[in-house]
Every structure is written in C-alpha cells, then in structure tokens.
Length: 456
Image (cartoon, rainbow, N blue to C red; front, side):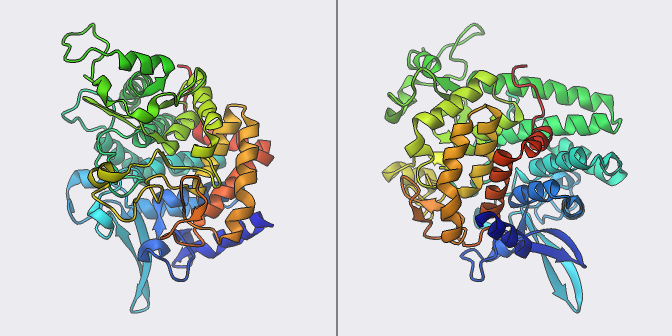
C-alpha cells in the first residue's frame, strides 16, 4: 500500500490560500532540516501537478499557475524594471497578518547563495501547456493576463546577449542543482528545459492565435538549439575518439574543434566507460570546455522533450543498463556521476560540506528522478529498466519515511541532511507507477511533454 501512503502525503502537503488549494509544500516533515521546505517550490510542484491532472483535479494546477503568475516580478533587485516581470519565483508561502492572508514570494533572496531561479518560468510554461492539453481550457491560455505573462517570459529568455550560440547562459545554482557545483555556463538541464519551454510556448501562442512573428522567431531558436545540442553535447565512442584526436588552436570555418576543446581535458574515468551501444549528452559545453559528468535530469528530459534523437535516446538508456550499479544502485536515480573529490571538490563546490562526495548534488541519489526515468524507459521501449527501477525503489521509500535524497556510491544511505516526508519523492513514485501500469496515463504524459519529433 505504499502508493496509497504516497497519495496521503500529497494530500497533507496541499497549501491553501483564502480557502483555495494553490500548491503543495516541499515537505511535510514536522522538523525540516531546511526551514523553507514548508513553502511551495515551483519545480517541486511539477510532479504534484501531473498527479492532480491525471486524477481530475486540474483546478489545483490552474490555481497554482494563476498564483505564480500574479506574484512574478516582485523580486527586490530589479523591482520595477520592465524585464523583471518575466521572472518567476523559486517558491512562495502564505502568511497571515491581522487575520488576513497574503503571499510572499522568494526569488532567491532567502536562498543559499542568493541565486535567482532560471528554471521556474520554464517549468511554469510546461505546466501551462500540460494543463491546457489535459483540460482543453484554451480560453485560460488565451486570456489577456496569461498572454501578457507568456510574452514577458519570452522577452526575458529570448533577449539578445553577448553570445554566438543558441544555448542559454546561466550561473551556478540556478536550477535543481541549487548550490555551487561547477555548472555555470550552459548546463544540459537548462538547455533541455529551455527547449521544452520554447516548444510549449510555440504551441500555446499558435493555439491562441498569437503573433505569427513570435512563432517564427521561436521556431528559429528551437531548430538552432536542437542542432547545436545534438552536435556539441552528444558523446559516444565515435565522438570521444574524435575529441581525443582534436587539433587545438585552429581558426577558420572548416574545422572540427570549433569550441577549442583540449583533448587533455578528457577525464581519466571516461576511458572504457562507453561501449559501442552507449552514449549521453554531456553535462555542460562551452568555449574550451566540456563537462563530461553525466547529469541524469538533463538526459532524461532530453528524451522526453525530443531534444535527443531516437538513436541517442536508446544510447542513453543503454548507458543506464550498462552502468546500473553506478547510475541506479540501491535507490534510483543518481543525479550526477561521478562525484568530485579532493581539491577538485574544493574548487568546484567551494568546499561545500553539504555537497561532499556521493552526497546531495555531488553524486547523491534522488527518488524524484524515478518519474522521468520510468517515462524515458517506457518512451524508448525499455520496459525492463522501468520494472527494475520500480522494484528497487517502491518498498524502501515508505520504510525510510520518504527522504529527499540518499547518500553513498550506490545510494544505500539516507541523506544525512535530507528532509523526510518529501512531497516530490512521493509524487515521483506515484507518477512512475502510473506510467508503468496505465497506458492512458502514458498517452497523457506524452501529449504533455513530447513537444517535437525527435528525429527532426
């Protein structure tokens, strides 16, 4: 009855504002390690929203979308600046003063490192599309408030910068990996979310008879981003051999090493890690740099959004199968592989005691990633991988009181600073089981996520 317990945890997490449900708390832990985990985080609400949409409770998702839309742009750094209106908060909470409830948003002002969340608006756009696709409520998407919000988001995220690539430049800590982990630049997870957001926006604007010029501009960016990621981020045996033999300091147009990556930057653990059937999208790519670490969320979302080709998607799942012990272990799914150690850990994380090797974001295992993993496995026809992952996770999560994350090389230890009764650990498991057991839910999720043909 673990799924029944997960549903109860979801119910207990619902946050109400003036009598209406508007979101879910990050955790129901009565003594959370992180004091802000009683707030509703935008990214954490995503799996909750998918459960609500599949159970006929779409009004909660609509309330959430409206709530976040109404509190956008309230950050203090750029308060009153026109472009600030396209920025969504990381989280919000309900407070009561003098018998009256109000909403307080956090745009990173209360977060560790004070980093503004780049992914919130992307997830908001994804959920807007998921809500509309599920309910057929195009009237909501076409309302003046929602249309204005979408345009302000796109104005911010499509703003021209001093860049020559279609990828999105972001600082460390601006998405799910919300502490310093050496992912500044062009991390894969952001590029996958960016791609999904652009595809969702294109469909929403087209379906509401929005400006054709905006749709055309979105299509140009989508095609450029897709081609760029597939060319520069993909790593398999053939690509690794090519990088290994790169010539550097080349100039001109007709060269292979256009980003001037030095072969010496290939880490030693890569030797023998890829077989002839495996591949993945590298964690980060930029001038003179490839981050060869495997980031699970970015690769899984690339499969679900169609950013990876059909062949690449199979290569990613082959990699999971070939390195099951390292990437899945005792608790699916490891967020980053491998962990950084020693002086590299000191330089990359700033000696962060929470991100010690094989803990938290530095090689920890995160139960919430079970839902995109099972979704990707079912999408690629790898049902056996979904079965094995579910068998590994289902019994243990409830027994361990739904922790936020696990530690250790195999994910065998409850995270030493993990919150318990973590909502997205429970909802991730619910969605994973629904995907495995219910063909209709797979169709629903496909319609919500599959924004492009993978082989375009």
